[in-house]
Amino acid sequence: MLKAEDLALTLLLTVCTLQAQGTTSGALIKTAWQPLATLSKKLAKVPPTSSHLLEQLASKLQQLQLHQAKSDVYVAAAADNVTASQWYPIKFALAGQINTLTTRIRTEASKAVHGAAAAEFVRGGITEFFSVATGAYATASQGCIATSTTASSGAETAVGSIGSLGPDAPDVSALKATTSDGHDNLDFYDADGLKALTTQTGIADSSLTDDAKCNLFKAGVGGVQEDNKIATTINFALVFLGRHPTEGTATARDCTKQANLGQAVDTNPLLHYKTLHTALIALAPTKTLTIPKFDATQLADLKSDANFSKAVKTHFLGIKQHK
Image (cartoon, rainbow, N blue to C red; front, side):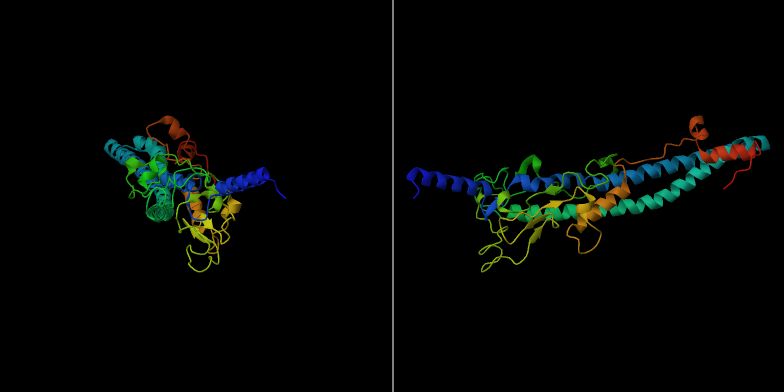
């Protein structure tokens, strides 16, 4: 038979364990929702960055076309074969650069559209999640999103608006597609996946506060369903956060690795994040936008241009070039 002090210790340990796990009707702690909020801020930069890329490429094309027009005028004004011959390699190089860049712009325009669309789609899903979760609120002790970081925390940190999440809040602003908001670098992904977008728990009792009267994430009786627990995992934020029917069971998701992102098929739970990663890699494979540096007024740029070298060898030196 347990002694009184042993019984008291057992009860104390039980209470502490329950507190550490949170409760089925608790509010979601910051540790669980912050990866999504951080991603939304990064995604808000994708559309203006896509516009920035196209603007830079268009500006470069305009510069090349201007140099081409000036060279045409100069050669025409000179009206002699010597000048025309001297300028031939330069004009040949310019024509090649313009053709290459024109082709690239068509390709990059498609990539920019896909990148911006994928980013805004995912950001929209994140926005919807936070809008609903913060809207399911009555008081600081009765809500579904909390600013506390541990499951053992009290229920007095629930918030009723996205703005109340403070500097950690997601970016839910309207689309910013002006080039002035663009960036040369997108630093939140690599060849493997989306950096830091991972959760070991999803929405489980270990990611909820003490009782906050929240039924939004409650999988058992009296929660999302009144008379029975949910039949299968219910997903939030485009499946990044899952709530298992057994409320203490974690639902891990990992978007940081290709193997976990899965294939681009409709049955893939993380399809939208897979699509996003694919679009970002196509837009900027090394996370840095690359703009052609060629300048026809610089001898070093001309000498390094394959078309210029080819024209010099064939036109002046009579060396036949193989295609």
